Image (cartoon, rainbow, N blue to C red; front, side, top):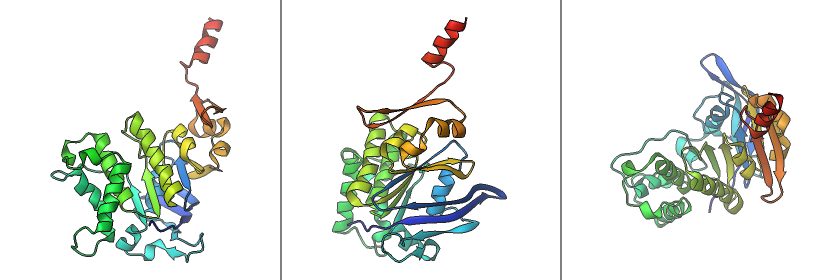
Length: 281
C-alpha cells in the first residue's frame, strides 16, 4: 500500500549562479490531487519541481513533507537520501538508456530505496515491478535490452521505474515528451490513476495546456519565476491569462461533449485570420 503524504514548498527562492529564476513561490501537493505547473520556457517550472525533489538547493524557503493531512511536518532536508526516496520520486526529462540491461532490470531500479543492502528482490518488489510494467504497457518487452528501444520507449521504462518505487509523492517533468499520441494519453491516464486510485500527491510539469486542463485538479501558471495565476484549470486557463503569459491570442471554450476546456491559439495562418486578410485585400 502506498503511504499518503503531502509535499510543500514555502517561499522558495531559487537561483542559477547569481540569477534568480524562482521568486518566493509557495505550493502544496496534496494526496489524491494532481497539481500541474505550466508556463513558457524559462518560467521556472522544472527548476521548481527539482527543488521539491531536493535536486536544486533553495537560497531561501523550505521544503516539507506532511503537516497538511494530520501528519507531523518533516523538513525534507533532514531526511536521508534513502528515506526521502521512499516517499518522493522524480521523473526527469533526460534519462540515459542503460546498455546491457533488460526492461525489467531497469524498472527494478525503482525498488532500490526499499531494499536492504544487497538483498534480492522480495515478493513485494516483484509485485510492484510487474504492476508498473503492466500500467505502462511494458510487459511484452520485459526481457528486451533497453539499448534496443526507441527514445519514447525508454521514456516509458523510466516512468515504470518511478511507478515501481511506490511513493506517496510523484513528481513528473514533462512525462509526455517524445511519446506518440497513444502513450501520451495513456501516461495522462496513469497520472490520474495514481491520484484517484492510490491517493498519490502528484506534481507535474506540462507544456501542453490541453493536457494540463485534462488531468489537473489544481494548476499553477508561472511567468518569469512567479505565479501568475493559481487554482482550478478553468479559473487559470483563461484567454486573458494565457495571452499575458505567452504573448499570443487564444480562444478558450468549454467542450460539453468531452467535458473539458478547449484552447485554440490564434496564429497568423489561423482560418479566421486568413479569412479576415482575404476580405481586406
